[in-house]
Length: 112
Image (cartoon, rainbow, N blue to C red; front, side, top):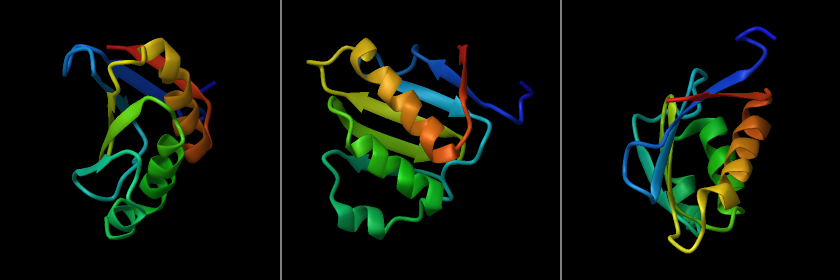
């Protein structure tokens, strides 16, 4: 598969300690320079944001994932803050599936 057929995701585990992780992508996922959301989501905050269609759909999908407390979106980066009671192994597949579903391309992981 070529780079254009997949969504390349670089996972940065070094930033933010054990509770935070960043997912860098090569596809624009947000129209705003930075948007932050606390979950469970206040739908009015999402409605008033400038995240664009993909960002909107991504935040809605991530709102369904147990264990996620915060979502940070920038044009090519998704930041996740998790609940300390959850392990990354419990939620990371759901995060990647959400990206894959919203962008419409299979995910290819590149570790940072």
